[in-house]
Image 1 (tube, rainbow, N blue to C red):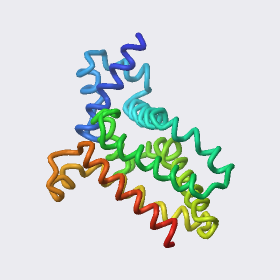
Image 2: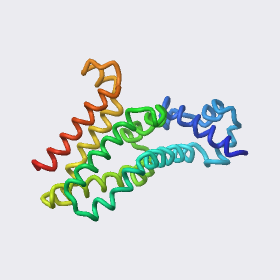
Image 3: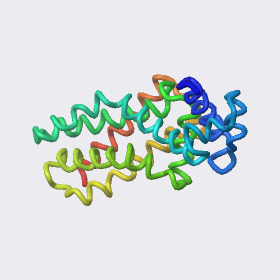
Length: 210
């Protein structure tokens, strides 16, 4: 078996999980569409749960990799105690995620699997949660507390940032509905700027008004 076979299986798995969900996808279809013997799934991944876990791990690693430049400034900003810098980094994080979840740097299948797992968690949810969602939530909460100059404590900051993530996932997973309501053809650069400007205002409201 080759690494190329493993990557082909994972790519096929994303297609099947995106189309049929975890419970509807079968290892037979995954192997068949990859044109690879079904025994290879057991060999590389240990079965359907294993290849699904690998898919979720791939999502976390991909998003983390595409956000590494923003993440890298987190410690510097929090060490500085600069309230304005914390506010701006919060905004940068939200812009990065909305553009990733709405743009083309992440495959459509990968995004579908992510949103499906977030909406209807399986046993594998902890992979996304611990590898991506929780670390980012902690960053956002710490930045909100800092941006507020300490007026917002950490527990409240965790609570207040939940709606931000909810809005992010709505903008990413309900594009057709939002475009229909707004009269947009699709998410182009102008539409994404409008969404990001709205999220910026939400962050300003939390920092200034709460």
